[in-house]
Length: 112
Image (cartoon, rainbow, N blue to C red):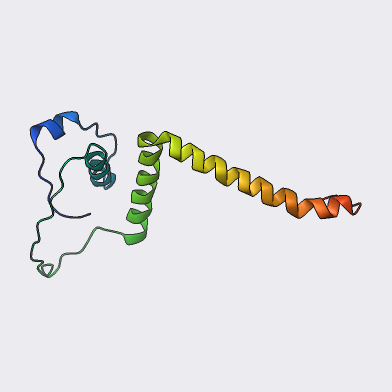
């Protein structure tokens, strides 16, 4: 998810940027995919970082922010699958808890 981005005027006028920082890139990509914009990758040559310079990226912190942004945008772009899958997860957790407690309850004890 690195590199330069080139957009046409229609894309720039229609995208609602709500994020800040590193998550803007994720928001732009998901918006473009949702609206079925054409995305083209252009190969480039990488060069070594100049001496004395350092990267400001933190793999785990930035990765966590990007994953949270994807999760948040999924909730807004596709609410039905998001809430349906959450409902299923809660149902299965309740189902497994009930079945692990029933044998103890019927045996005369309480499930704690």
